Image 1 (tube, rainbow, N blue to C red):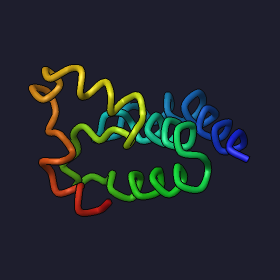
Image 2 (image 1 turned 60 degrees about the vertical axis):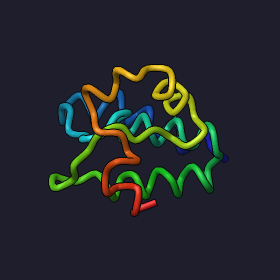
Image 3 (image 1 turned 30 degrees about the vertical axis):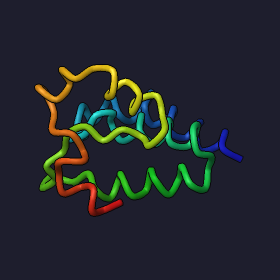
Image 4 (image 1 turned 90 degrees about the horizontal axis):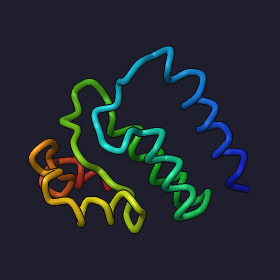
Amino acid sequence: MAWPLLALIRLYQGVISPLLGPRCRYWPSCSHYSHEAITVHGPIRGGWLALKRILRCHPGAKGGIDPVPGGPSERLCRQDPELDEWFEVRGDSDSRSAD
């Protein structure tokens, strides 16, 4: 059941996103976050995480690092402390309360 969602995300990444340009205020981008969340947690929980993330991403959002819980992006954040120099970590921002 996850593959149709993943295919839609890849379609967005390949066709629509290049036309719109970079807009996401978070790392990984919302589409990459959604793909990773659905891949790691399945369509129900991953879809819920993706929806919450997309709702957090808006022009007034502070943004920053917001890895998928238990996913490869979270492990990468733990392995690279220099990321904090470029982004505010999710746990230090107000976005944690949205979880």
